[in-house]
Length: 51
Image (cartoon, rainbow, N blue to C red; front, side, top):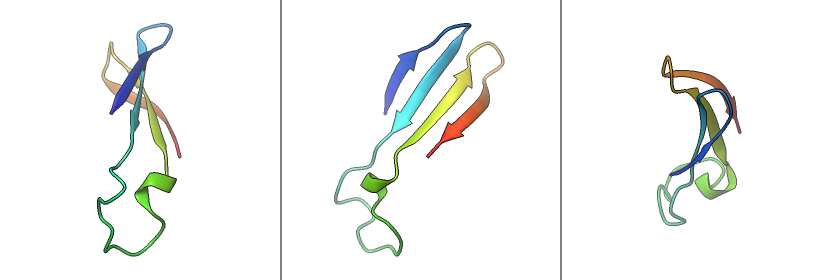
């Protein structure tokens, strides 16, 4: 997990999986699907999700 502060009490949170995680599951490798959340730290609501 990586976090980066943004403006107006927003923090961007990124998750990345280990290359060997979930290797027996169907679908694209998790390492190929970056996910970034924008979170308002005042209300703790997720403002957006980027895949």
